[in-house]
Length: 455
Image 1 (spheres, rainbow, N blue to C red):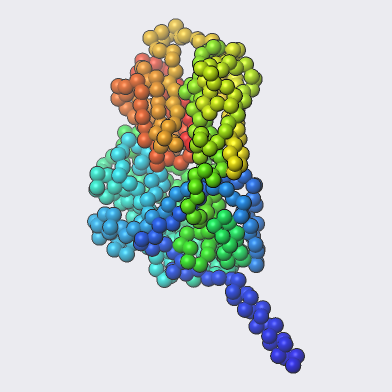
Image 2: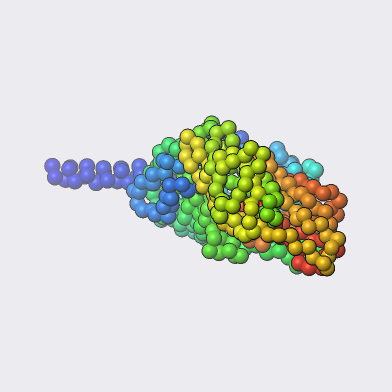
């Protein structure tokens, strides 16, 4: 009798262990025809995404979406047959990834950029990218594929893979991407998100990447290096991670990693989205009494959010019947100095605050005797269409401009400025801070620099 009881206990333990520790295989990956919805958010609850363990419960049920998107997977051959036939194979799949390659950061009209993947019984790999320009495909195919998962994937599995790809676009432009990934399945259990509760494997990945972009007219290549610590919670039959949290640190600013939280989700009404406060000003340098227009870039929208503005110090006058609680106030400052601006966005789902310290500088105009012909009305820039379009104004005397992100990567260079105003397509760029350098044809000093924030 004791042997029977002991056998039942052992079977029960093994049964529980086997049911808890799932195995991820090729059937759990995306395939052609999949349309997978996800949500993006910040970390309002200050969750600890790093902790892990065996038979662990990760409860992220209070995550509140701020933006949503779709990952749509197609056969490469259905997007561009030659890309499949000559480079990636007819079984490869692709999804739009505009912004993942620095090609779209130059003045090149792109029809699309796609990440290419191949799913097999033994692994799920990225084969590279391709861009479409007027229907013509330009590939970057890895000579060493970027293996994202090796199958079967189980608890305690570890692997390392390197990847390398290089391509030339004529004689003037070349791009190299290389790096390596270290994977470790460091936990198993259950995860709860707004999407539901799932048995899961937790995968920790460290990804080292380097992009080197050479443009003949610039002489020296632009190199961007970054390290990403990525935590993914994988479940059966869900195609993409239930939750993926990434901390990306660029070599130029290693102590300020960019946090990205993405989770599998269903369609959510925009009115249910938590607020994400964001704003810009049409000018950030002004004289006392000069009017400044604040552009409110918060999501999900002004019909859903309410706002409160504050200024420090509060030497401010409102114009055109606006005030502290208007969506887009118009103000002037009465005294010289540096001013911080704070915006609080509130709706029925939550609250978000954005503080831009020392954002506005107010001083009396100092006209240079050396360059009296330069218009002292400085350029201004702000985003419209939820960050898809960058509007740049007051370009008198500017011969060309360059836009950089905070890592020092050149996003775009524009020559032959014949217009006073400019609209730049920014739909493929990540959210964050960008720097615009304005170069004047009749000025020998350093360029004028302006900071803008993409929502």
